[in-house]
Length: 172
Image (cartoon, rainbow, N blue to C red):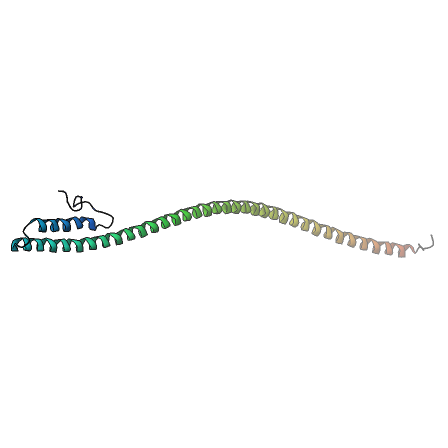
């Protein structure tokens, strides 16, 4: 059905959404002019149509307001989701960096542990070598002590022999 006053279908909506209702108002006005406006039935019917149109306008305004609010909420939610996706991507990148850093540190730790084991082994070897050297030193000290005792014994023996022979050793 075409609306003669507006030149559009009543179901077509414009940018403000009221274009759906405006053709209906125009249709009622055209009907009022074309029919006998003084007839109580026509006046009653037109009044009901005007009432329904106003009611539709109110519902339409309410729906448009709710639609605008919903679109705003959807846009806000979409922006929030995009922000959360960016944050998640940054967190994944950070996690990958931290994982790589952990791997590098794990490799360093293993290297340090290997070096520590090598140094510990070397320290044990040096401890054994030091113990052997200490034992050698003790043996040498004992040998020196025995040699000194032997020298002392030999000096006493020589002194005893000199005294027994009563020879003057300083003059010869």
